[in-house]
Length: 539
Image 1 (tube, rainbow, N blue to C red):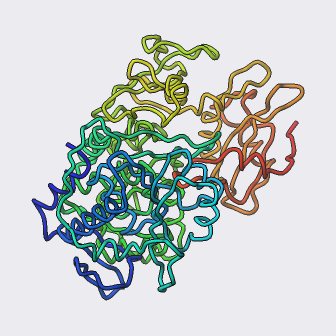
Image 2 (image 1 turned 30 degrees about the vertical axis):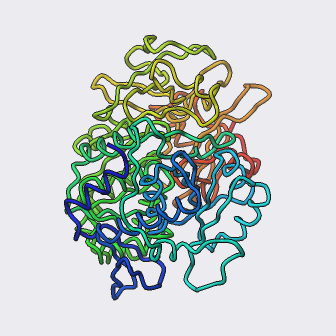
Image 3 (image 1 turned 90 degrees about the vertical axis):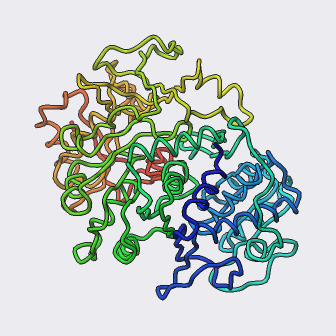
């Protein structure tokens, strides 16, 4: 099975089922179909949407795109982004979904690194595209998706809506991929360096979709709301595709806003939602939440970062009683999952391996690469390695990096975990984030677990900063929930905690307005370090 066949099967089974609802769709007539709603959204059935994707696939072929060629997609969460993605799958081209927040320099790097032949972009981002194009010489064709007003096309650029609605051929392209063929290059967020292109095959992505269908128990009647970016594995492979697999309805919001999200949940009777913890907290804190009708939600899945215990309790009591908390990576998608029935008993855990995942925790021995059979003892901190049909083929044009992270089919995540007596996995931080202070090993997560329990702490992140005396000192960056919170209060709370040894106590406390996060919810450490102010050091 390949990605395009998932859409074809949905069309065969449910041609008249609503496939897409998009509030940011182009406001122009669509001969292939679409239905304007009173609320300003546009809707496509599976049959209608499939015709658009097929027309665009033939249009790309007419531009010279062949199987294996890369097509970059630089768009918000819109109909155009998913149609472009699936047009690539029908044609055998490789989709390269891009972060719509990328500046021109990073955009140019990924276009050059991927060897993209075509770039599909929203006119909102035209300036960045034109600047990137001066150095990304490999891009032969540009396809512009218009915004809210009709503008003149940049010279030589193609109009997406014309290609998707009036190209004269809407039959299925004559291409049948092999499971090992590439379906997408998904670039890592680059929180520690240059982004790497993760090679996803058709077999990888089908396995990811089937895994999520089974783990979440998805249904044809589900209505999934997408507020997480679709250029991310958590948004496309692990949430959009699984709902497509069962013939559900995917609802797209171009730009996330908590109030708008709550309104769409109520208006569209949304049943399933994927949101990073920051988004969930924003919805709960929005002044309109108390008046919002959210009872249609039957499950929420989250990941990317830890969900504070107090926030989890509010989710279960006020938003949705079924909460899945997952752990994954661009290279392996969803690999660990905490089921709703275990949420109360194992707060803070990432759960157990998913149905298609084999997971192990291997010992840490300095910089030496340990073998997959060198398992850590129960309760001992070690590196998580995973294996399964969803694990990437490798990094694009980076065989050395691939060899560093892969051995005998196992992917070395670089993340530290423990496994408790009941088999539940607990995240301890990145291996690179281990703090060595005065010769003692300190894992940031164990300090964060204590800080999350402190009243007045909204968010926190712990790092080790250089120190002449100790080598590194534990530093806590805290977003206060109350303006009166002071560094001395944090220090006093940590001193009283029975779960934190004194040598692990933060010696530096930095109060910040926000923690810089990427769209997948992970704290961008280099930004945090670059902008933090000198902080007091408790005695």
